[in-house]
Length: 447
Ligand code: FCB
Image 1 (cartoon, protein in one colour):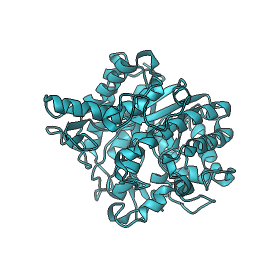
Image 2: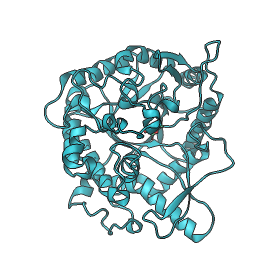
Image 3: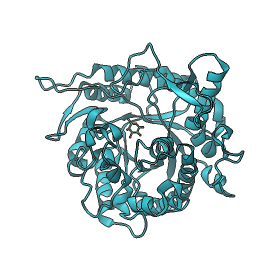
Image 4: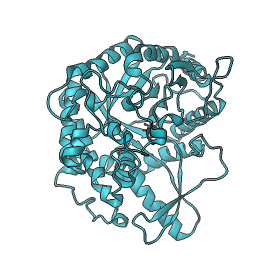
């Protein structure tokens, strides 16, 4: 493994709804994911995050595992419904206490806490009242919540992330209906892009005025590859690139929307953009979070509201999810970002990267997840390749610490470095856990 800079952050990432459980405790309100999971057929086998990995009760054990890994940073998310059960109004102190204790425990182990404010668990009342991210008001509500969180924690937290993957919220949550809140509006989901981005901008300002030192956003990025050289497929891939990558990066980094004419929007972006919004959205950031899993291959689908179709990518190993394993795609994402945004791109952190596998505890009590080790090894090298090509990357966070609730897939996709037996909540570190621990130790050893 090549050598990374001494101050490079080595982390893992998790999110609240996927690990915490304890959905009725200490005054937590309901989130759109609680509601969505109860709809028949919404998640595989009707799984819910009611218990998840029970991290709300077992956080000390989990923080111990992180200390054992020798992590230098931990990206977790704060559950908005724990902090503001109705999505507005005064803080629920007991909800904040949980993150306060976690923050102190991390710091005591030398681990930098990196919270994300929104990893998809919108308070249900905001969905009921105004349509969630379809409503402009939700952006302001999000900023109010950000301020509450920062007032409590900013004295100890160096870096905040506002949103996680607004593309997935728009596309899966409001466009296709396969994630909460389960709206299948297709292109009618476009306003949720702008309202999330506005929420990001307003929250970034609120965080800073409440004392936050550094602020970032996390976007999911995927190289868009045309299925063939046919100009129609090339145009389809460009359209997908705009929707998946540029729609959420251009406004933040350039202060303008990309050409959305293929999706029925005018030159100024979605119809709901108001004067001054783009200035709020594009206020400079201290870091930019990239989540990467795999490239996407597209062919043309003329005459449909979404003018592309996803095609399989053959010739590579696949994860349990069926996603192709292509580390070079991560280098491509990073070098493309640098080419596209130049000096407007702040230092980058890989805030999620990892793979699912059908991991089982063998009779001798071990979990030998060699495919995950190969995946991570390849992708960490791919990050180094991008750095050699001049991209300023400051950290890498594996998705994820431990097996958890994988959204509409329920407990069927295991992404963790630690195996979780969901019947007993027993944690078993996998082979990849020891591999990552040793990698971090080797990188941190002074030459
Ligand atoms: C990302 C999500 C994360 C996890 C991984 C597998 O899109 O941010 O919560 O589900 O995918």
